[in-house]
Image (cartoon, rainbow, N blue to C red; front, top):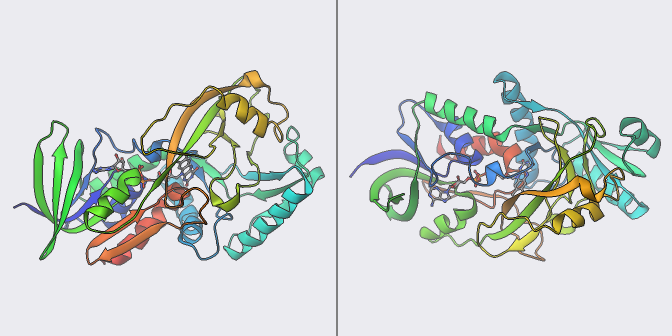
Length: 364
Ligand SMILES: Cc1cc2nc3c(=O)[nH]c(=O)nc-3n(C[C@H](O)[C@H](O)[C@H](O)COP(=O)(O)OP(=O)(O)OC[C@H]3O[C@@H](n4cnc5c(N)ncnc54)[C@H](O)[C@@H]3O)c2cc1C
């Protein structure tokens, strides 16, 4: 039977970042992807924001890997001409209870080693962003945006340059423990079955990562939490220059429907949070436009209902079920040579280079 050294399941930003980090010319590493192209999962349906790291509980993997990943990501992007921009971001309060929330967030930022954020007064906000409505804001100068696809292309090219191979249209359907590694069972797009042996298996299967983990008896259950986006049109370029967020939702479910500006200057609103059945349904209900208008209009008073229209959606792979407390990323060597990445929701894109370093330490 054919044998490889390391198998990475899933060619999203996590699997590709890991491949780029751990590939060595002397190792036989393959990345298996069920789709016909890389990056078509969660990694292509998100806000493409390089997060600052102020939201997550102190010491959590989300906090630590976000802060480390942010620094690494700006460096990688600058050195490899990956389109990105350090836009900065304002989290805005529209009443005094929200100002108290921002103060808590500012304290959490310091606990997370994010020392660049600062509270702003109404007058300072008016000077920086004259078209938004807020009584206070938390300013994060380190927040930015990046082209997720260019980043993934860079990771893949780096991995391929060190002799890692990617195999498309190949779905992992079974895993079994063997004496010296794992039996990997795959199905091709025409149903053809192929089995091989792998010394190490790294599960980066995004929305299916719990299913892959369960194949070797590791019990995880992901809840699918959809995030819809709406496009904004008819607003003059430059009306807003920073990313503008409301105070986050309770219990870390989401960051609240916010305004992002992509690298082409297009503005969009979202994502909201909606737990759904386990199906990859990316349709956006028409009434979302009005709902986003009602919520974001509170701090973006220049918006009119006709400026907003349903756009795209993404699905978060959440270990946290509805009403549950915060859940961290799971990045764990469950048994020698079997590494699970489960629940890699936001800030997974930002954290990707730090996640890759963490996984490398399990191996070498
Ligand atoms: C709405 C939304 C907004 C977000 N915004 C941000 C943000 O602004 N900033 C940020 O840092 N993070 C953000 N995130 C989080 C970030 O997008 C994810 O953490 C990251 O993309 C996860 O990457 P991944 O590689 O784990 O998953 P994926 O990109 O889904 O990759 C997993 C891959 O595994 C493949 N696969 C699955 N099962 C199998 C199988 N059996 N065999 C072979 N292949 C398989 C899939 O086809 C897929 O290509 C957001 C997420 C969402 C949903």
